[in-house]
Length: 147
Image (cartoon, rainbow, N blue to C red; front, side):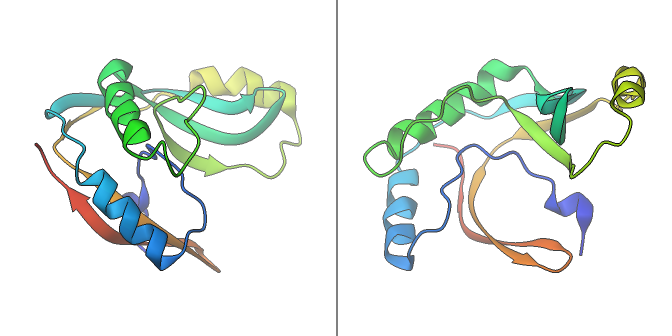
């Protein structure tokens, strides 16, 4: 399992869908046009709150370019899926089952320093995830480039 390869930015979570619906999604996403943009991994945070941590994430800057792409994807799929509410561009770093010392966690989280990594967004992918013992295995169903 290549953990670095498994990090991804979820622009739209579709849940479990049939192969027929996946084909319809592929066609809809093929109509999404966007320009490449530069972004960077920056900052760290948690969902849903520091008092009830379920996900530790790395932020993406600038958010506006990612949000614009996400909104285009949302619009392309609006007939089949509900629109996202409160989309926050992020990379999931860890899923948390239990924080035994919340006070210590809250004190240490702001001290975590992530290396700023710049990258170019030139494509997005329709990915299938399959839960396995080690976590999730990902498979690209389609790749969409610039348009």
